Length: 472
View 1 (cartoon, helix red, strand yellow):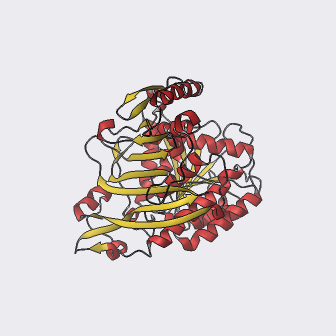
View 2 (tube, rainbow, N blue to C red; view 1 turned 30 degrees about the vertical axis):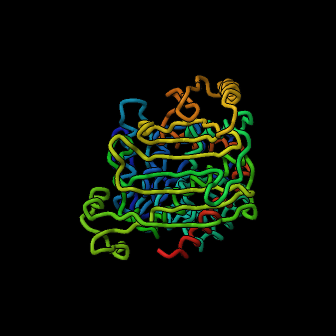
View 3 (spheres, rainbow, N blue to C red; view 1 turned 135 degrees about the horizontal axis):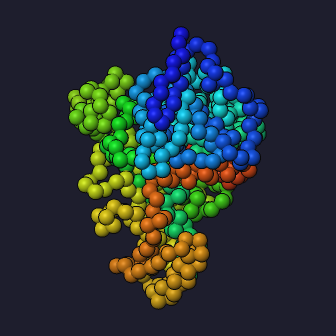
């Protein structure tokens, strides 16, 4: 077996294919459960099996608390190459380049190698979701903190394992946290803020299954651009046994936002929720579309089970969940299309229904596909009183978000937001990472965060069960 050094300016890789530990990976072992003070470079990342571009987006920025030397453990193949290519892109860009030094091990025993050597103290995982629950369980069993892309579980059969793992982590002083980027989108933040002003919003409705109090719909696209380049997806991304169906994947964000906005910093017990219904449906891709997204000339054997009408790949990437939290009805819907219309990107729709006004986020053609927040008074409500209350609310919000304004719209008012707050989806990964670093320094995930991780995955996996009972 050989260890060899490949030098790429300005990034250095050590790639170990089997064999004994190299000098670079013989790091001083940390305490059984690493503790953090917030000092520079004490957090050391170990990225496991990076199969999703979110793993690289964590490293699009640098952080004082995180060592520039990052360790990667992965099977050989295209996934790890694409991950490293993105890190190199960030290191070599002209504006604000990063300085990551990637120490890479590739081999079939990548998980065992990470657990036996433990050159870092935080495992970052974003990739094959079919393995993710086990990865998290193994990391916690070996006293490693976990920073995980969503979802942490994709089938009901593994929900109990996730619960046990999160409880074991809690009892051991280990921090397991999933990456909820959508909490950092400015229109969502302001929707949440405005819902707290009774003069504007009134009180949150309870809603019904047919007319929920809060609805969220997320539209995604298989072909898209990331960091300015066409995104190449692995073929396994289209296998729902590995990526997960839409109802347990992107829906995680939407369920999280509903709890986060309607019941801020409240730990929701699963006994306080009820899953009313779950639906699933497929997006069909042609062989040409599949090749454009993956680069693969044909469907692999693992996807043949999903081929219909001789050549169309059927992907159950779409889902809808109707559920209640403390009697409040919410709806989370996720839709995957092949490609966005010209000028469009992934989009988000959200409505919170109050007794005085609805708070609505739209992101369609009239908004130039940019998320835009509206305040729309209900029929029969004194609009002049709402306007005065909204002005007062905006003035108070400006203490936290300077420059927020209001202007008339067709059904009420549009909230004008300075561009400095519209940082985009990719930048949200750095914001979530900063929050996780705060929690590492504090030595604890807040109780409400911990509880709501348990509950939101209960909701998604219960909805999965219901969706598989439907007649397609």
